[in-house]
Length: 230
Image 1 (cartoon, rainbow, N blue to C red):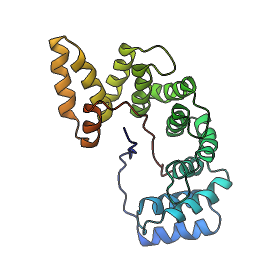
Image 2 (tube, helix red, strand yellow):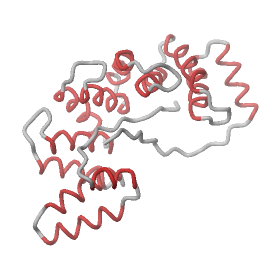
Image 3 (cartoon, rainbow, N blue to C red):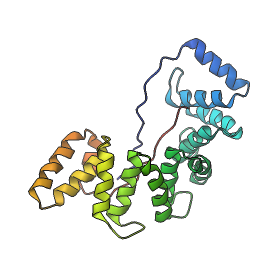
Image 4 (spheres, rainbow, N blue to C red):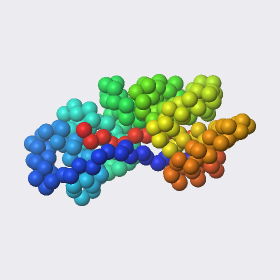
């Protein structure tokens, strides 16, 4: 299954031209928060013409001043190769601080790096540890990724019950991939009640990309989080 980034749903706020100019002025004067904010605007094309390279430049300036969110955001760009050559090792290095400080997105992404062995030696147990921290805080992507480790027996003995429990937590938050994995697990169960539940979860999911891959028997793939705006 190929990677498909998940974009968090955020309320779109109207950004006036005056506000954009203020961000630009503050960023030019070395305001780390404004540099990060403006970087995200360029990354998403929000209020300005999309420019990934400019986003990377601004994130770097902010990160050098110690802005933890900018470090995470720069890590995302490096991990995905957006506006800059892909560099997993640098992404891992950038994720460590925000992950340590409790940023759940950084914990998820650092977990993905350990899960896949990108930029760091593959370590399922460390991936599980990071996913578990974020999962306990209610992050559906972390719950889903941790569920995959249990379902496929990566890092520890295969445990379908624990995988299903984690998928349920994630599915209740309307996370489509978890709904599908849970639907498949119910469908494999011979119990008629659980088979009925499988159609319920399939129908609730509108992620056609995920439907085609999972129904064709594709293996579970850990999902990263994306950029933050703070």
